[in-house]
View 1: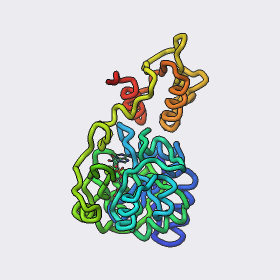
View 2: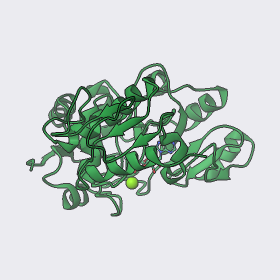
View 3: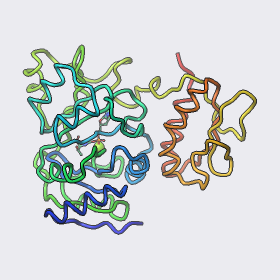
Length: 312
Ligand code: TXA
Ligand code: MG
């Protein structure tokens, strides 16, 4: 349990929020849409804690928040059309899903996908906190999984009190629904309707949006089965590596690549994507030790089951 503090919307409150985030803490921050549960997007452990605090049974990809387009361009690749959209609608309630850029974020943020969702929020406190922190903030809506998104500090505290370090008090969010999510491309995909009307985007692009995703341009994480899969076959619930297998251990079933020797599920989640990628590079089948089906273990096992599922 953490004692969740309510930080005032002052220079001191913002400085304290930035300090907590720099130390790997979680801070709920007001945006113009809803409150976000923010953590350092470069810090595997902070991002793992976001999933833990929300009690999400899956590693859905998270939105990365940045103060402006110049900062955003380090983390994602913008083609001409993406630039046009960003210049027209940022800061504001638009999230763009784009190819990953040169500066890495935790692979947990993009859930192992080659794309990243980027948003530049307009709320003055979000802007000030992003500038004070000086890095990318991963922030899903600040509610437990399956509950409605919070638009007031007391909503955040209702759901997450004791699970996060602080809430930056920005009063009531103006827009009240999440950002609109768009994947530019051919055709441009409306992945989630939200605070920015689709008509405004269509007018900017000069052509209609197509709702949802498709097999090779997925929208919902459930459609992403093939993206979640390493090249190598994956064997779950293993007690040891057979000859010729790579190994990913957990707890007492250790070895050179142990998700968490002490059985800490936050640590295991933080290591998961790195270890899968590393093991996959060895070019051999991968055997994985059992991970308990509780807390973050549910999201870890969901990811592992997708990795082990037969592919087309
Ligand atoms: O208004 C908002 O967008 C709020 C505030 C806090 O900024 N944030 C928010 O985040 O709603 P979240 O995590 O609740 O929603 C993120 C959505 C997920 O449903 C996910 O499917 C989609 O964005 N998403 C993120 N990265 C993606 C990617 N690389 N490809 C496709 N969809 C992605
Ligand atoms: Mg949400």
